Length: 179
Ligand SMILES: O=P(O)(O)OC[C@H]1O[C@H](OP(=O)(O)OP(=O)(O)O)[C@H](O)[C@@H]1O
Ligand code: HPA
Ligand SMILES: [Mg+2]
Image (cartoon, rainbow, N blue to C red):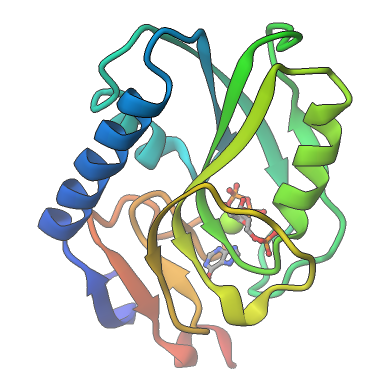
């Protein structure tokens, strides 16, 4: 697994520090409000579980599972909902938790979908942002790191469902997918 890593971009320690910073900021901004965190599965699973423990106000959590990459390194452009929310978000403050924004197609679709359910507010928090690749405009409210235009793995993020359990964020060697 590790021999497929071209470069480690962010170590466990760097991620931990950034997650704590984001948690602190979110705690301040949502003090006194009812907040629902929505994790976007599968990728955001690791980030969500670390981040929510750094948010020091009462929150509820829910998950959507969507997929557009499948086994490829290119977005299919079609976002499929594999699992919907369990609870209504009407009149709630909602914060979407994502691992990575690339083309932006997943979140563009998801925001449209969630806004139609009339939340009190809707914001986006992502650990990683690859702005060079954006195909649709998005306002990112909370961001961990900007990343270069490379295919990323680790800390929840996969290539063909592998590498999610790497504890750091890394660039995948091109040789792994350019065969
Ligand atoms: O901005 P975009 O180009 O839409 O890409 C970002 C999305 O792609 C990945 O999910 P994926 O569809 O691979 O599903 P996964 O989370 O189960 O890996 C990632 O977790 C984001 O949700
Ligand atoms: O760089 C990436 N790596 C893994 N999954 C992704 N989904 C969008 N961009 C990426
Ligand atoms: Mg994926």
